[in-house]
Length: 630
Ligand SMILES: Nc1ncnc2c1ncn2[C@@H]1O[C@H](COP(=O)(O)OP(=O)(O)OP(=O)(O)O)[C@@H](O)[C@H]1O
Image 1 (tube, rainbow, N blue to C red):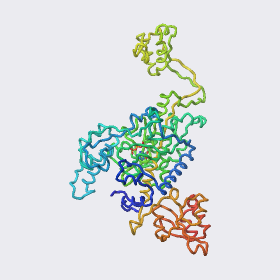
Image 2: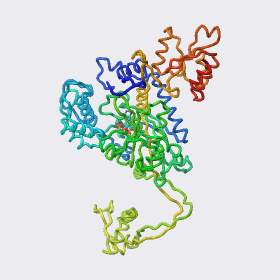
Image 3: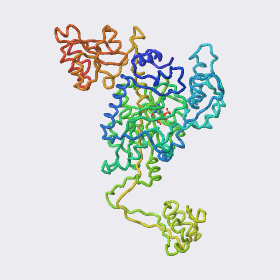
Image 4: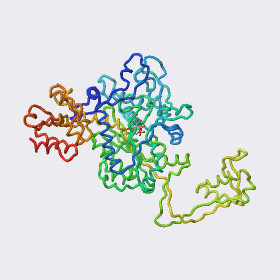
């Protein structure tokens, strides 16, 4: 049971909701008949199949996403491969760092629902939440009450649970005697577990590959081609919708934590010195519920409501482009029917943020499982392009002509080649390369040292005798400040990345639009908006006419009573239903019923088809139809 409420303010009962989405085949556990077979030894946790209404809803959400982001802003869409060679993910940092902390329950015995491995932060979260529920009378009235100091202490830990590293989590487990809640076993200290699925490519099995955990790396590797395609013009964005894979430690929350899921991601490339956004004015008045870093560190959970403009001005959100996308994300969620009173934007805490990110906000949706991250919005800085460029030697920068030539002052190191050649012989090339790679800060301090001591040591890899540096005297090395004229500016773009978990959004949306008619809990309705509802009207011969107009619909020619058919429509979230009866044959009129109000109008077939098309396109409303066709 949960504290979430439905549209009508009733308590949300997950078991009734789940029964509806299962019965109507929105989604189902994969390999189900194998799972239920006594011979099956495999693991299908975290894997789901979508049924017909689930597929239609998912396709409509993705369609709405494409219109709202890709088409609206001329983003460059890509479809990159899932199979990714190891060096790419080594370079991006995923092979070393894409891991969660995992605790093993070492005592063999009755298998537990979660298996013998638990994700450490979730384990602590679940145990502390259960203690709070019990100790504040939430679960049983008879349990001993917790004192206020303990309640505050637990809430404080929960508010910043994402900020603990492995040692921090181990400390919490020890200090608060956290055990596996399913059998009260003590667990082993947390160890990192990499979440990527590994395989090999080709018959030799010599080249390791991974299933991508996100679509972004494929997009980054195409950066140079996209920049050319975009005729060198900045800023621009690439976008991609595709399956991603994460070997989650303990997937137990249905569609919310799965091992294979659809991601829709945008990589917006921007000049690091110009993070303003041309269309910022369009969203600057959008009000965002923001749970910033300081609020969380103070152990609080109430977001402050600020406009995007205010949040950027106050520097709560790092820059305009990031603010622009947070505003656009909120508008998208609103379009597809998410309940805005169940949305908040939570800023990442310092430890939680990926090592490369400079600011990161998650759009979280409230579900019966609590707040769930559905969209991650990160400013990934220049990290990805820089590391891929360094590894491959490919230039992933932007060169822009300056409006007028500029003068730059810089340190320059020159070797006297006539002396260096005979002095270093076959090491001369290595010395030359080491000097060429010195950066400006190092050159500046070397210039001072050379002037003072007359000799400096330069780190030099690849020397024949295995030593690591060479000494260069001021006869061999000359360092001076020079002024040169430049006509272009070269920079590595920063990347702002909004990343949408379509399955999590779909599931949260279903919970948000679910309610039951006041007279009976089993009379369930999914009030999905017209824009994303799986089927529009149920029609008879009208079906073909509507299909030609681009309105998805499903025909119901079953012998079920009209009441049963409407109940089925409600559970599928079908916004409008058309009924053809004997009067249709006689007078050519049909009945149009609206799902949420159950009100009906009767009118000529042509008028009804036109009204449906208008409502789907957003040029007509149900109220206007009611007035026209009483
Ligand atoms: N296991 C999963 N199942 C379903 N969706 C997921 C899963 N992992 C991530 N996502 C979705 O992908 C988006 C981007 O991934 P990101 O790496 O930011 O998630 P994350 O921070 O690892 O998520 P979490 O902290 O919940 O594990 C998330 O906002 C979420 O919607």
